[in-house]
Amino acid sequence: MSPRAVAAEVLVVGGGMAGTIAALAAREAGARVVLVRRAPGATALSSGAVGVAPDPFALPGEPLRAARGPLEAARRLARLRPDHPYAVLGDRLEALPDALAFATRALAPLLAPPLERPRFLATSFGTAVPAALCQRSQAAGDLLAVGGTLVVAGLAGHLGLDAALVAASLERYRARGGPPTFAVEVDAGLGELGLLRPHELARRLEQPGAAEALGAAIRAALPAGAGAVLVAPVLGLRPEAQVPERVAGAAGIAVAELLADVPSMPGVRLQAALEAALAAAGVEVVQGAIQGATGPGAPIAAGATEITAARWVLATGRFVGGGIARRGTLREPALGLPVQAAEGREAGVDLAARPAASLTGAARVGPQPLLSAGLRVDARLRPLDARGRPAAEGLHAAGAVVGGHEHASDGTGLGVAILTGYLAGRAAARPGGGE
Image (cartoon, rainbow, N blue to C red; front, side):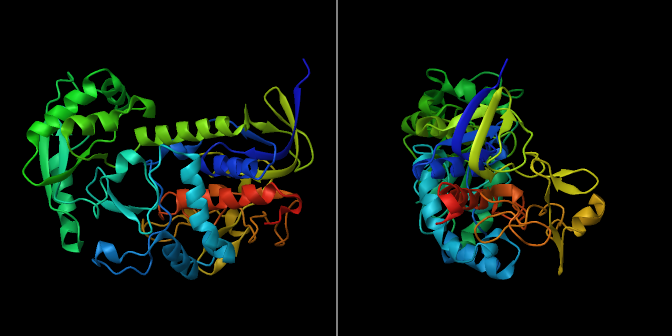
């Protein structure tokens, strides 16, 4: 059986945040876009919120309201980290607010509108992290927006959240302008919860009356002066089930989810929103690994489909997504592009040939060259060869496959994905890659 032939102007390889934003940006610019993916992206493993840049110059213990906005924090990070994508982009970093606004529109109504400042959102470990974007189900938990006591509500029998521990840990932010905290435990009559996995509890809360029962139980347990309630990140899988709204309506108070750890129900919702946005925009999605890739303009096979496109965006992720692999040395497997790692003042493809163990450090907060390895790109997000020249005409890269940032630990992962996806998609939609 002959493969189905598809001609497009832009081919995006990768189905996570970076690939989806690239495809949507190219589509908005008028290009015919095909997106190829092996599987849903690693976005489904995220907390569901978007970190752009922690301010590297912020002083310990400074007031939360003193935090710089996402763009200024990204500028500061770029000055400190010359290999970071924010630094490599140069003046194109100024498009960050436009990229965040684009992502918010594309993923409406899941995402809450961005603010000029970061939202400080609590995790199930009792820490608070800055987020440039978050889901509507998380927004009311912003420590700077709570008027009154922040109540952490645990579910009786649910082993996934220690409400008392979270509330006690969040008290440390009170001196920095956060709200007072208080813990309660409620029994919503949902049955035995101890062995339920997050997705099972999320599904249970979607059932008729379940969200309302939880809200009523929260309302009965509220202390005087409560301003908002934090709950485990399990308020449904389908936004159309309106679990957060139903719980808040019955509770009579703003209710927000904590940021999620893996497995992440908000992350699953975010990935579902990405897929819905692609369908709504008319982007054709082809499932399968690409084969026979030599570069833009040449046909490639993905499953039973043969695709030809003059311009490509590689958004294949890093180790989880398969965009970077170790085959004797760190390599980009789709086109065999060289991978750069950096350690102190030493950087380049030669470093990527070292044993993996020598590219990691014992100090978690220290540099981890292995985790920041990826493609070297220029300011137009064109992958470079070993001599520092564009590797192929019409080729761009976006997201975690771009090196220079530790996307899982430095707080910039989804921010880099959105900004580079937006810029790469717009560039790929125009012949010659012009802005």
